[in-house]
Image (tube, rainbow, N blue to C red; front, top):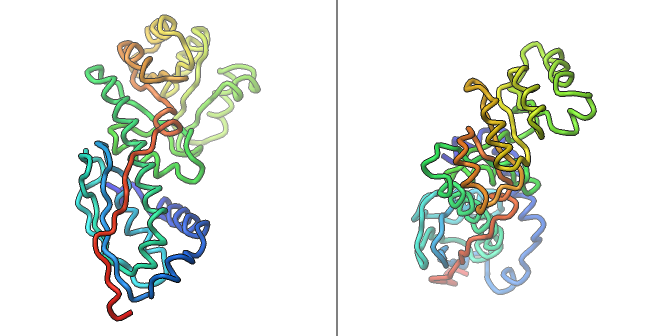
Length: 290
């Protein structure tokens, strides 16, 4: 799944992100002084709580982006696996200075992405049985969007547009400046010979009626109370997708899901995810040939 999700363009962005993470950590003066380059370490990455795991393929990618002999990585779990407290998810053997310099970068990625997968899984479980798909948003950590959206997938969620090019989306600022939903939609359809998929954000029932008359691919109900959202959904015909969004939490998602929109989107699964607890433990060291 990781290799399929990270196509050439996304992989190039990922490499830049990893390079930046390594660069901002600088030289590991402590490990360089204590361990000769030929000294070897073995380490395990262990879950310190029950959790989903995500980001394990990044271990190899981090080492690939570093100078020096590449450590040997053995994965003992797969992304999206539920792991137990104390369970070993990866084993690494390699040069002590390289392994120790990479440690915090690797752990930051795994802990954060596993947290996103966990948060997503809780939201997905909360809508179980309704047929509603949980979507992420663009409320992501700058530079880490594709990783976080990948982690959402590992938690059972689905991805909204990853960037501004994947879908046209009329939001309140666009509509206010254009003067109306109709004016904005007409301008977009005139601008493109083949108009990309279009979503219209609606804040009122009048907005919904106007949007329905224009047949976009999707209508978003933004920050509507449950009763208003229920009425709005009755106005949207089956051929138009519906999405509920706006401050959706674990406490509020189930009543919204029972209205049966096509999607519910929430930024909480990325911007408010609590990191999962993993640690890297040294299991063996050798200064042979040092």
